[in-house]
Length: 105
Image (tube, rainbow, N blue to C red; front, side):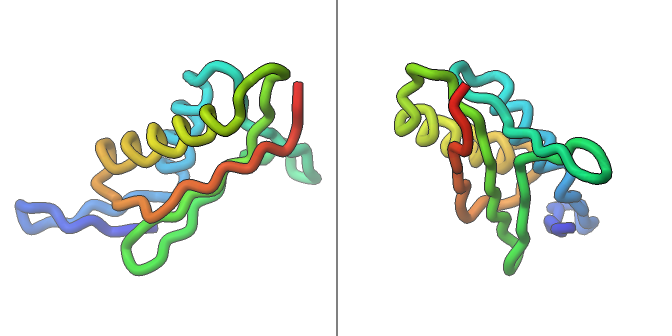
């Protein structure tokens, strides 16, 4: 969990789940890709993970791409959109967004 200092003197704690949710929504709104869901022993797991280091977040997303999608352009667009959405909605600075295309649909 990451803490963001507020101007009013209080603190806001942002859970990794919130950042995963924001990234997931950005991905679902983007044509040509979808979040890669892994089936496991305890149900379906998200293809998105978040790590905090020195107050900044690093986000990693595993995605499925639709055939014919220009994955380079799509990945760059997603990196920018995810970073902007997380920073705008939470105040958490994003160091990087790694995109990995793991399957073709």
